[in-house]
Length: 236
Image (cartoon, rainbow, N blue to C red; front, side, top):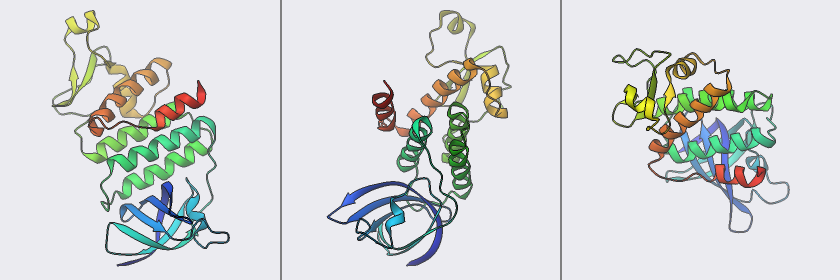
């Protein structure tokens, strides 16, 4: 199979042999694709742009196996330069996509949301807000059952809720709220803010982070993430 100039973002690269790279890329039409980029580390390689993360690219490749052969890389827009917290946020999202997406399973809407997220991080939007909205869309796209509009639940701002792997969102009984016995509980007000994508208060940002973190941990099935560890080591 030969594919020409597919809209893509590189998620991760690693050295392969002496001058080549193994590449994980997120593409609009084909989903997560893995490549070998032969000679990409050589000076003046026509594949040199594959080394850039967060850069909209048009990729061409050939191959029938799980590992395709990259044959061309062209810029497809303005590069997004991420630094500091924005950079670590981008790396975290890249790792999520690599670990949650099935290979060659298209998610065009999620691709558009990823492009929006990278643009927002590059222009300085609050990572504590834009990451939560992307996480919400990601778990919904993955079909893990999280719904803020569940037919059996009318979210009440004053009530407390938790994530239940069996049913998604579950309202907590008063005794659990009083005893504070449920880890990662979240207020209805925060769930409503998350649904409406208007996280503003420090409390709602914190609750949304913890709540969605539990949902994502369930989605990952116990697989650890490396990017949060790198983040803590870099900024401690």
